Amino acid sequence: MKKIISLLLCLLLICLSFSGCADKAPEYELKYTYDSHYSLDDGSLEIYSALCKAAEAGESSVSIGETDYDAALRLFYISCPFSAFVSDMNVNSDGSLRISYKETQSNIAKKAEQFEEAVAAALYECGYPDEPAEEQLLNIYSYVSQNVSYNGELSTAYDAAVQKEGSSSAYEGMFRYLVQQAGFSASRVYGVAHDSTHFITQVELDGELYYFDPCAENSFSGGKGLSYFAMDTLGLQKMGLGEGTCYSDNEPISFDSSSGRFSKLYRTVSYEYKDGVITATTKSGEVVQVALK
Image 1 (cartoon, one colour):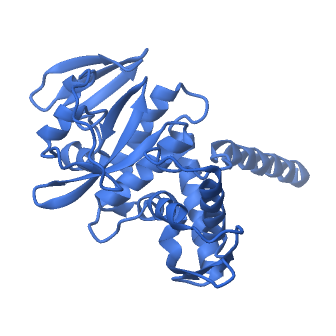
Image 2 (cartoon, rainbow, N blue to C red):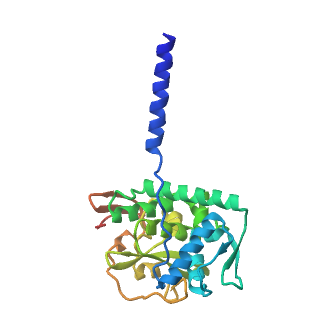
Image 3 (cartoon, one colour):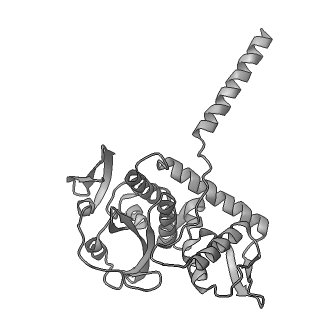
């Protein structure tokens, strides 16, 4: 009898072990994505990728064989989440780049792993890579809106992904990184609203440019609605962002008229998604429908 009980317990433990593995997010090979507003030559992109790889591992030196790092460095600080670990960079006399860090190499490697695990878990929960792209975009927006709490002292994608806290800069960085991993072209955009700088993400969807603000969504609906999902430029103006709204290099965005495809979602506080259609309820109780595809 004891042998039978022991055997059953072993089988139970094996089943539980496999069950836990089934629920665990897979490990994705994350891409070194970058802000789609910038057009870089192959040499600058090579430097950018090398900088990302070095910062991810806490390496102290990068050498690509040329000394013009300007374009790659600018992109590194805008687009690479591992730039949060770097305290300073200096070009050596031999053309290599010397990198100083805020923490030890072992701590940086640990933090990079934490970030990658958090991103993999988020992508998995949002349907990547199996669900249709538009549905992944919707899921990522709601995931970031609901799972990050506002903290004006934290500003990076790492803060939002791992610590689940951050300012609009952190919300924007995490959202942009996730949608780029899912295959969307996206850019960082900022403007001044109510006397403070606010960051949002521009994403290309079906050939048009839309704006996403998961930070404002969290504040307005707790992340349950779609008030700031896929806004056009009129939507930006409603939230107080005018023609001074710019890309990260200070080039103004275009305020040309757009389709207003998702404008009915403004001031919604809850939604359901089924068969390609978003059914959302506004704060006043009105029910609206918008086709996502």
